[in-house]
Structure formats: structure tokens, C-alpha cells
Amino acid sequence: MMTVSLCVVAYNEELFLPGLLNDLTKQTYPHELTEIVLIDSSSTDKTKRIMEDFSRKETSFYRVAVLDNPQKIQAAGWNVAIAHASGDVMIRIDAHTHIPADFTAKNMALQESGEYVTGGIRPCLIDRPTPWKEMLLEVENSLFGSSINRKGAKGKRGYVKTLFHAAYRKEVFDRVGPFNTKLLRTEDNEMHYRIRKAGYRILCDSDIVSYQYARGDLKKMIRQKFGNGYWIGITLGICPGCISVFHLVPFAFLIGIVFSTVAALLSFWYLSAALWIAYAAFVLSGTVCTVLKKKANRWTFLMPAIFLLLHLSYGVGTLAGLVRAPFYKRK
Image (spheres, rainbow, N blue to C red):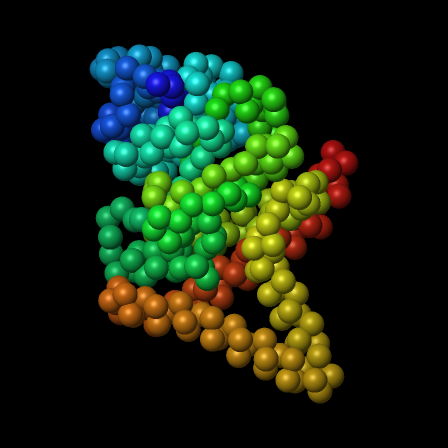
């Protein structure tokens, strides 16, 4: 059987890290074949202390390493993991995450079958549920509200362009090199682009599930969507092949609003009407799905407005990134 390194990069994650470490201890893949690599990105809270306590107390794994990422950014942290992980396979796990007990075992089964990059879907969940947070969670988990890669039909398996929480054979990095530290949020898209260019395929199995804790605060969600869109714009200017067409939908919607509004001022009002009718149909369908799933609450009626805010935030972020990209690339 192959050995595996479970790698976690964290910055100020004292609230969520203990739960994730508990998840790691419950993994069903043999612990004697499992290494834990914990990387602290210069946290100012108790994150590193939690890592060190875990390292001292947990003896079932063949190695638990606590390392430092002085550059703080995610890409640099993953490069520290690549440099120090000793397993045949390295699995990237974000700190703001919950992973089921069979997560490692399912990935390793695919790796043992001959795959080189594997993973699954990543829906969201929330901590300390309230009706408001549950409504925001429904927005985040909606196909119209978040990434298409977060959802998948059970039992569906196929090759994709990118993955969350992917498992990589170490030899993949030996061939394609480390993560690009110039990219702060899209480093995985760029890495997966290079992996595909090198001839590897990326397998997604929807039976493999990991969960990200969604933000339960609307302002934080808006800032996150703007930042995600901004780095999509930057990356599009540097590496167009790294970006999927789905990443550009909010930007296209923003441009559509501008042009259809101008057209309406010039008496071509039907273009604007068609855009907003189509958009309303999509956001209302997302809201109706929440009702049909019996997950509606007193805040559900706000979902269409939340969809609009998040899409505009992402689209404006992409526009800002595209404007910045030529200067960023030259720098």
C-alpha cells in the first residue's frame, strides 16, 4: 500500500483547526501509512500551539510534522508541504474544512488504481446554525450561487480541469514544479493547468466529499466574492488557460447590465428586459429549490437579492483584476 501525507496550511484558525485535527485522527486509512504535515503561516492566535500540542499527543501516525510558512500566503505554504512531505501521495486540505472518515481511503483507492490526481466535491456547511446563516448557506451551496465544481451527482466520476482538496502523487510536483507564489487565490487553478499541460488527468469522484465552512456574515461573503473575482481577473491576464468559462459568468452578467442599460437609454429597452427576466428566472429557481428541499426559513425571500449582490461583487472584482492584470504581469 502507498503512504500518504495529509497537509494542512493554516493562518489564525484556532476555532476550526481542532475539529479538523479530530477529523484526521478518525481517518480509516491505516495510520501507520499516514503522515500529518501541519504548516503555520505566522498566525497571531493559538493556531501553532494547537498544532504542536497535536504533534506531541498524537502517536498513531508514522510522523506528525509542524512547519512554518514565513511568507504567509497559501501558495508558499503548499510549497513548504511539497518540500517536506514524505508520502507517496500528498493530499491538500484547507484548514477551514471538515473531512469525513473515509476521505483519505477513497482518494487512496483511486491512487492505487493508477490515477495521479484525484478528489471529489466540496459542498459548504456552517457552524452554530441560525436561520440567517442557513439562508446564506443555501445561497452558497446553490449551483447558481457558487462553483459548479462543488456539486455532483452521487456516483458520478469523470475527468475535470480543477479540484478542491486534491490528492497528488508526489512525482507530479517533481515534474511540474511548485505552486506560483505570485497568485494569492487562484494558485490551484494555475497548478492544475500546468498539471494538465504535462499530460496528467484530474479525476473527480463525487463519492469523495469534503466540506468547507461557509461564511455566515454577508459582508464577509461579499468581500470574499470580490476577492475571488479579482484574482480571476489577474489570472486571466497572466494565464487564460487556467480559467474556466464558469469563472467569467458574473463578469459577463456585469457587462450585460452595462450594455443593456445603454441600449435601453437608446430605446432598445427589450435587451435590458430580456436580461433581467432571464436573471430573475434563474435566481427564483434557486430560491424555489430551497423551498422544495424544505430548507426555507423566514430569510429565504431575500435569496434573490443576495444572489445579485454576490454576482455583482464577483463581476466587479473580475473587472478590477482585469484592469490590474497588465501592470501585475509586468511587475
